Length: 128
Image (cartoon, rainbow, N blue to C red; front, side, top):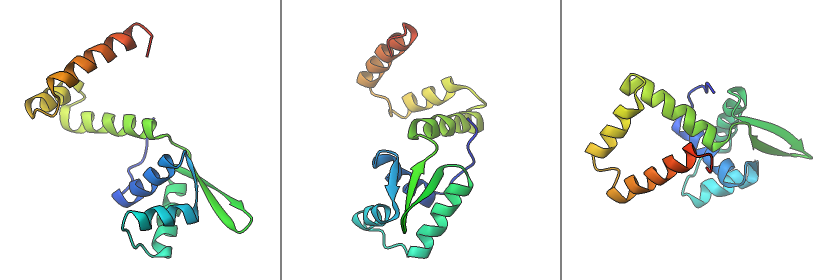
């Protein structure tokens, strides 16, 4: 999947929609922003949501006078695409380079490593 880049603010809105199960009303989005301590203006949020619709990340439908936004891209799809962008950009397409950097920085603990090995085996054996 090739996904256009989205801003940090757009990503924040996508995370709200994803955490709401993939659909959220405009009012729910504003409520989640307020709970997160964000005091974004209505027009700012509407502009960001419109950009996400234009980029193909969200769809919108009218429910009476309310707008319901639905994720057109799952969080897992977005993460996979962005991981590939990162690997290509910083590690010349080598996932090994990324993993090696994480190990060097101790971002992966020995316990994480064991868990990753189990995950790898399960995926290779078709039990994932």
